[in-house]
Length: 54
Image (cartoon, rainbow, N blue to C red):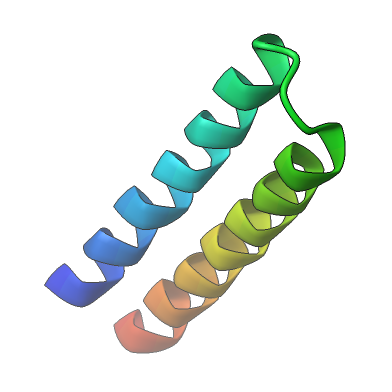
């Protein structure tokens, strides 16, 4: 269970980093990729969490 919580924290950190980079007007493609990776990571963490609870 703690490993799944770590996944949530990492994914949230990637999304937050991308949002900050986007707001600062940095590389838009890189920020978009980071957001995409973060969202996918979050979805994977949620699905693992649901699978673990069954």
